Length: 467
Image 1: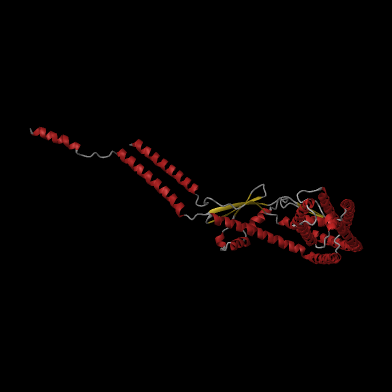
Image 2 (image 1 turned 180 degrees about the vertical axis):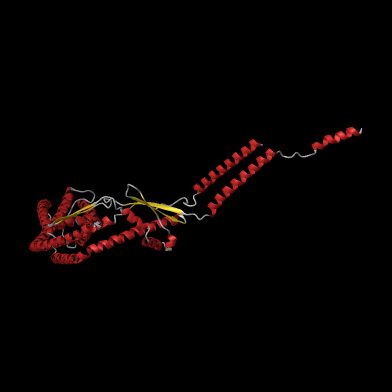
């Protein structure tokens, strides 16, 4: 009985004991932990560098120095021409002007001027990176800054300082070349100014600007004469028509105008209408009764009152006394419709007004013609003096222009020493940091992680084969 019990205990004992890991599992776990730790350290270092390193940004731009030569040709009035030729700054294979500009871009005066423009110390401003592009006339420059705007501002400041320095050097060279010609230039300028002053005073005093003005004045007089002839012809036609209408109506043009004034007055027309009604009524009563009948007498009194009112209103409208004969002549027709007589009255007034306008226009044209003819005679006397003064100015201008041309043509050689600077691309506004470079750091961390992981795997496989 004891023996079976002992056997049960010995069988149950192995089921209660934890099995220990094998050597292979311990090795795999070790290499896995090493790989994880090493990769974590690599990326921690990379990210820490990106986080803690002070970022810098680079703004780059490009300039070009024109390589063509310069040929100048100046035509001088009544003198001839002046020309000059400046060889290309790149014609000498042993001399590259870009090297001079590279030196200037990194020189102390340029860097100090750029730093002063940004109100910073020259040591804090930094130095540009300048590259000369082979087989071209181009130069590439770049400046670094703490942020994109700072880098771009430094680039602009350096470019402006370089331009200013080159301009200053050109001006110094030009001043040295011009030193011997200043006295001659000043003398020729004074002579020119004196001649111009005399000419200006003469023009202001006489009103004659140029001989072309005399020609234009003559043409204006001729046009006025032609217009006066046309107006005279129109006036003659209007006068003939006015006489014809006046003969037909047996009234003058002034009387026709008076007739239309009466025609337009409502009170006068009402008086005429009342007089017409009373007169018609009186004629009817005369046919029925005798002249002494009370009705006839009363109607005759009303007629006389209406007539007096009509005469009184007509005199007030015309501003002068009016009699029956005048009133009869000025009768333009019914108030309800336009008669042929009224149309003739209207045409008479229109032609009369037109004739008056043509008369005034003809008088104005004659007056203008006389004024311009007098002015033409006066200006013609000044023509010879004007030509003499203009000739003096032309000669002075020629001398002054030749002096200026010689100075300018000599000054153009300055660009042979310091060629023009063309800004091909503006300083860029960087979007990414130049240092530290996220792409560079991440790429390096990635390759380091790959290589170390690969090395751990190789070691692990060798251990695995051994085990």
